[in-house]
Length: 185
Image (cartoon, rainbow, N blue to C red; front, side):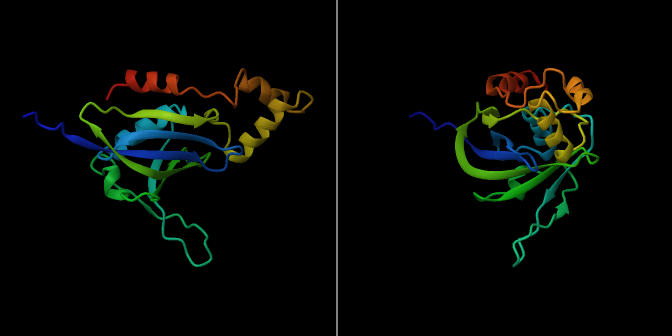
């Protein structure tokens, strides 16, 4: 009789870059046991960041009666903390902040818990739009840059020149997955 293959819990996570309109987002599948250190590296790859700034993971506090969201507690040890220790039910959220100067906040939403086999490798299955360029100044400045890109008569010619051939609508899950496979684990 054949032994059943061991199963791995796989998290379907929607990563949304807060403060972007239209939103920049990715849907990724990662193992429940992924450490936050490795999740950080994965987020850098799938979002298109260059890992040149500080980051942190934050557990959001519970919503208060007035429904405002309050930033919660920083997760201390990313090398030992696994994602499944922090979020484990569908609908649970975790915040990832990258580049404290620009303040890029990403909401990680656990959408589904799946089962995979031992051969499972993390993957990006969907997404929309390009990640903002590094050091562009945060969500408000990024919104101004997008406006400048769309209007050839916009007075920010210098900003448009700095952006070069940046295409805000560009997204390729295939390219992201190639980068994930090439990355050293």
